[in-house]
Length: 262
Image 1 (cartoon, rainbow, N blue to C red):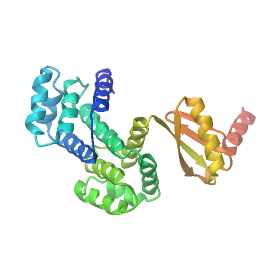
Image 2: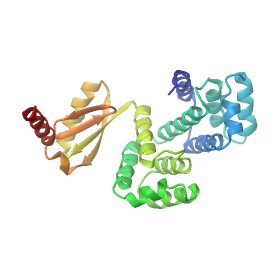
Image 3: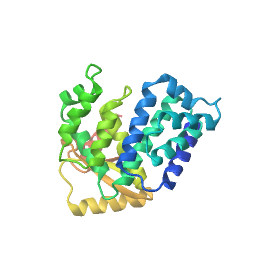
Image 4: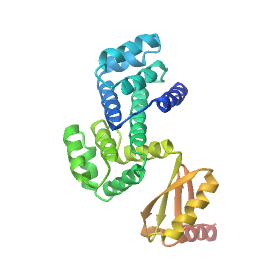
């Protein structure tokens, strides 16, 4: 991510915080805008052109997305008023804001947990992952398949996020997109996501203690995503972003073998 994009995304997120009454329909419109911009080099070039005045880029938004709600148009105007490092990063920015709006619209829903749960379903079904990642099938057909798989099992917000991502993969793997969406949802809720690998399910007491310890260490509320992994043998392996805390017996044995060999 370029420095210009970092600043643009921060400013756009602040503009989102000032928006009132955003809904899942607002998120749906932003996803549609991201897709439209990604599919048109002419449109993406006009909206990301650093040589064009901000007001000119905002006029393009009004001309192309004038049928959208005022909230969606306001957010898009804020986005294009900023300077982005590239057109693709502008698209990423609009997509991130769509995910954030979905999280805002469903504050009582565990969207992050539902996204993680679906990512585990994908991980356990290589054929499904291959089908969703193939360039041969139509994106709308893939979205319809995902919608059918999710029907009744997740919230409307999660279903919207997943089907929208599947419609606009832009050469990204499905699990990569889901992991990014999970981080964005956690960030919107001022949370940190910890993926916990364990040989057997944690008890409620263990989850509470682990969450409290990690929250203190990382100075914020930590959400736990649990992965059952027989390779852990005993103990836990916890990953938060690039940090890995490996307290598993298998890791200790591997460390011991390395010391003995050295």
